[in-house]
Amino acid sequence: PWLKAIPSVNFVSVSSVKARVRMAPSAQSVVDMGDVLRHGGCLALAGERYITSRNIGTDFDVSPEVIGSGVSGNVLLARRRNDGAQCAVKSFSKDTLSPQCMSDLKSEAEIYLTLDHPRIAR
Image (tube, rainbow, N blue to C red; front, side):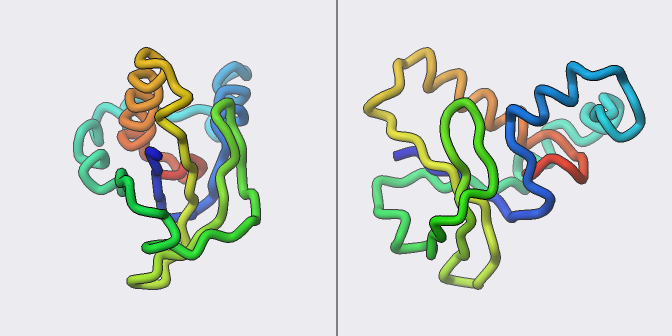
């Protein structure tokens, strides 16, 4: 499976982000593109991705608590075993994704890693 682990701070699901972007612009409802451009590339290095064929339970204690959801599934609360940090974990089975869908999913993750906004998890 392809897994993404991100520190949990003000997690917002993809569907709610899309809903806010469609709303009329306001200071709290949209991401400042200037900030995105200024931080482009550097936050992707700071983001954490966990891609392995190993069982996720080896590195994370995953709770059944759903903290968000999006088009491709639920996001669960987890804790990293090595340092105890809380994380949001979303897993994907590569076996059920078409090559185009997998490419789109990886692109979406890269885009989210470049965003710098208090209401969007990295």
